[in-house]
Amino acid sequence: MKLHFEPDLDFQLQAIEAVCDLFRGQEVCRSEFTVTPGPSEARDRLFVENHLGIGNRLTLLDEEILSNLKDVQVRNGVPPSDSLTSGDFTVEMETGTGKTYVYLRTIFELNKRYGFTKFVIVVPSVAIKEGVYKSLQITEDHFRALYSGTPFDYFLYDSAKLGQVRNFASSPQIQIMVVTVGAINKKDVNNLYKDSEKTGGEKPIDLICATRPVVIVDEPQSVDGGLKGQGRKALGAMNPLCTLRYSATHADLHHMVYRLDAVDAYERKLVKQIEVASATIQDAHNKPYVRLLSTSNRRGTISARVEIDAASAGGVRRLEKTVMDGDDLEQTTGRAVYADCRIGEIRVEHGKEFVELRVPGSEHYLRPGETWGDVDASAVAREMIRRTIRAPRQGEASAPAGHQGAEPLLHRQGGALPGV
Image (cartoon, rainbow, N blue to C red; front, side):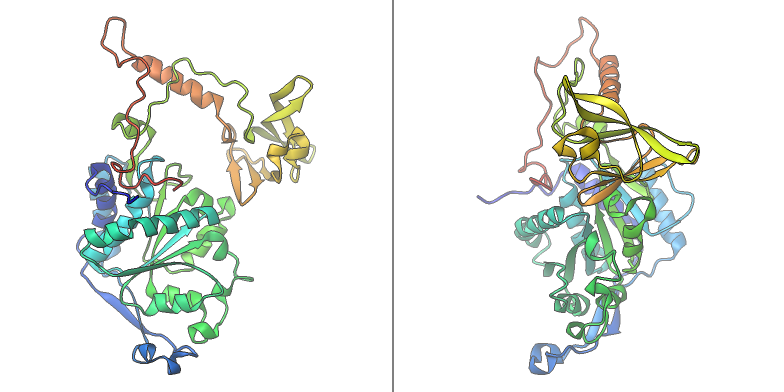
């Protein structure tokens, strides 16, 4: 079965245009730098002739980018930025609307308009990395047809195959490297930061820096590394031309350029309506759930009050518990669904309270009232109120009973890829 991707969906094109128009006025150009020959190049004629590295080059001034940014923000109805505080730009797209397709196609548009060729996609986990790689595979023919056979290469970063990084730096074609944040945020153990014969004796990170890649971050709230920011530092270490941040649930909004939130997606009939006018939550305990209620410092003892699903004599119930740094939530709740979930740092400073929640593969930072895991009852209640206010009055026309809105179909939504 061959998948068909619709290339003309307006909401996806708007997200692509929002990013591309940031560089309006940029001339098509590139930078060049020397790449040290690798140990096998003397035996390989294909590489003997080329020791030139090719990178992205930005000619626009900050003032020009800021002007473009404001124009894009006004056009898309998001608050304009007062200044250009960083090269980070945010695209918010609801799950199921084609986020992965959008940022992959943005790569080709940036190459077509401005000649950018080096791109690094950073993801929070191995599972998402494999999903992005699969997306590249199944959209390969689609993009080649859409962009007149423009040649491009893509690969998963592998510390055992650092020759790929050298090719990334020297190739004149579009290069897309997909990497997990775990492979770049630990300088003391990662080969990315060590001299290697496979890269001509240079550090692979130095080659990447020289290309000034466009860095695309998938789910930045999980990549950044919370308040400690290890992931953010690793992103900066790649010397990006810019950083494009894509998610449905951003923690930090860096220069928002496009927003398609849950309400917008529903209004456009891109996702199913969730019937909540009479919604209740019953026995929804099959996933770990933690809600931070408060933090406190009593006589030098720092603790937090959380709401969790704990085992009790009457079964699993949502209870309030006091926890401290290092507490194992599996033991606290008596439930295996909390395996390897621990409480980390607890901050009690007024206005800056948070609890670090360490879960397999990542960390989450909860502020009072914030939830991780299962359905948040307060969010459902808010949606119930909103839907009730908007419901048709008696006697007005309404949708047929059981109507669920328009389900996003793969052949209609360019990026609605399973599991991505």
